[in-house]
Image (cartoon, rainbow, N blue to C red; front, top):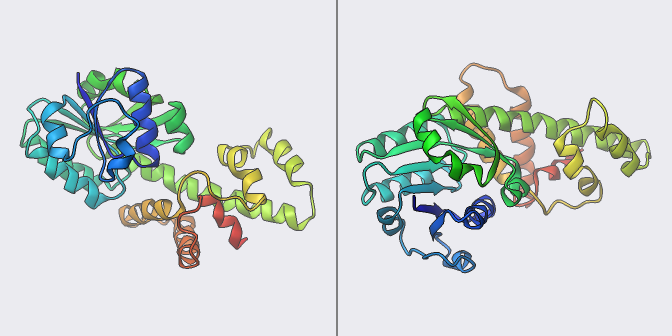
Length: 276
């Protein structure tokens, strides 16, 4: 199967590299052409041209409107039985709209957002949560396995995105807890490296503390998941909540908005430490 990748941002680039290393990648498209330069496979000037040539198309773009625009574009040339796998983080409603659009062309759609950050994309250790037809997923599972450590079929179309919203809400709470606790530790004039080391090995240990604890306490916020993108994801979760209280998420949205107004939107989400 010929596999094409659309979207070579921080996450998409890492995934495309893993696909290329595994010998699956057959073409790439990105709005900024310079990002395609490192790949030896064909570079496409339009997503429609890529779609006409591929059997499997992976999407990794930023927002709901981008996903829908890209799906509408590729639907004009896509072949029947093509499989489109969207790894973007969008709403369940957007996933369903994309699936409906492609079904009219007899193409399949999986909403397959990922967790694991830029490091996970680079190292092929992403966790992927998938909505859509299980048989379709089985068809592309070997391809997706080249860039993931875990692939879980959640259920019907949209359920992958709903699960990603769960993940993003949880990340907000972890960010609040870790940044608050480390600010407390610093106020107690404790040796921060030792505090992080010992707590990482106990009940409060977590990925965020391991990978961002030292950097945030040293005022380094350049690596990882952009705060503005997490804000976008949490706004999606807020819209999906419909009657389910998510107070930590609402607080985090407000905190992120303050940081974005101060010019920190492109920093890692650990920049929340600035407010503690």
